Length: 128
Image (cartoon, rainbow, N blue to C red; front, side, top):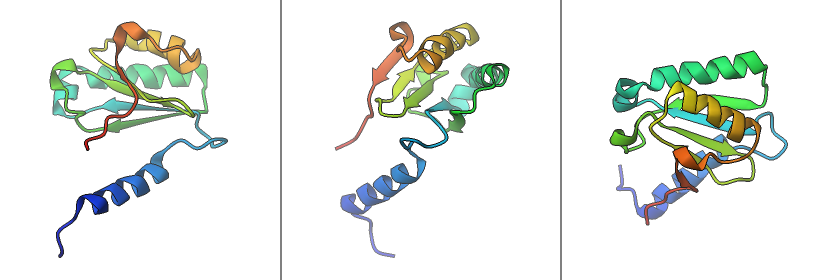
């Protein structure tokens, strides 16, 4: 098997992004990713996931896609979620509790306003 070049990795990433990104007019307007590496789980990510599932179910929202991922690389800031809304930069929220998550759900996911107090970053990180 030949060695992969940086250009090959960029192409793989672009292809994966196209298949997993939110599309204008698609069924989902918001994607929430709960980072659930072992560090996230140990810090309470399971409670955050449960809290989000409860909010989605209670409000009967059909345009929110809830998923999980592994570690985001910031173990000391767990539990974390990333909120991606169609046409907007992703927002990474850190050091969450169930109460903070509910506030983020109300203000950002439903209301469209970033909760600055819990946000670590707005936009995607990319290694060059």
